[in-house]
Length: 540
Image (cartoon, rainbow, N blue to C red):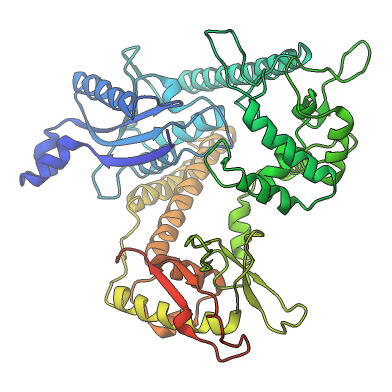
């Protein structure tokens, strides 16, 4: 199940508005609220979150409340601080604004149990500050039939303690899992998902996963190993595996990186590595040999690792260990965005190879931008598949031809589109917080507050204002992103940087297939734009 997040108007309100009733008529003096639902591992096609919303509807009705909006994070954990929950973040923003983007008010939150919405102290603080932005906030938990007093100090302490205990439990579970993995490794038990070359589990015979070799797959695996051991290039091993008729266990064609990983995995010779370290016997210090059939000797495995020490290396760092260390030092980063920011070529990963083999199969591998080299004095796009690598084209001519087409299509689709210029829907809340700041300051000056009270109220109010201002900035940034192509013109295109041009191009283009130069035509001949085949997305 793929993770998904959404926030939508409640179906009852949507139907009432469609029938011509006003929001006030539908609300009928009930307290406007919202519902949040979340499941970590959804195995029933969103049925679980739907039940949570239904239970929240019932509990809200018992307390004179109406659910205006539903927020859903499906198949997303709340226990990992590195995993974003888009619906939760939108919920916090809307609660702090005290209204949704359509302008309808919300004041309360209903959940079936507290762990659905918060499991970490920092998330509880975000939610608590949003609920207490004014005196109308309400927080209700359906399973325990509880409506919490979010404005009391005792509730804040309870929430922090509960979420902290949840965080500790998550840490304990992670430690238990790590310990279990190491225990299984020390015992030599085969574990994990099925590897290519081994048979899966069989409950009837008692066979464990990865315990016995698959007679056919292991023969192919051994053939690839021998190619690398004799000094053949990794691309040769990739071609050999492709020609074997087998796909990867995920159903994909073979590629260099997964082949290197597979052919340097210590499991090939019965060893295991955990976080870059060989699992060894605590008494002898010798590597633990697992209880499964192998396809190579430890000596052969060491030779394979020497050919590619990127993934497994008993004598030093690997790409994985370096990445873990970097994450610990700098935190996780979106490397795809970083790469996109530094792209130099307009059509990298948009252009695709149009070479057709003898069987009539088109390559369609993504083409990469390459600088001048050898006899090529200009930048070029070249097929990125080492098994093909048969098509290349001069980059500047290709870019010019595709840009002209993209600009024409963008003008047709977006020139008449008017930009969305909505006002930040939390402006009233922010204004009220600023008024409150002035009141706090005036109360201190007039002697109503002593210094300790003033600092306590001031710090809390300052945090609320800062978060509300951040929400406003995010809202306008998102609106600007939606308005990116509105009123498109050639002048607008001229002002785009490379990232913006690529983003605009992929809005209308799925790909650009670059066909090979026909036989008999000189490669040094004039550039032929007819050999470029654009593949368009559905019209906006």
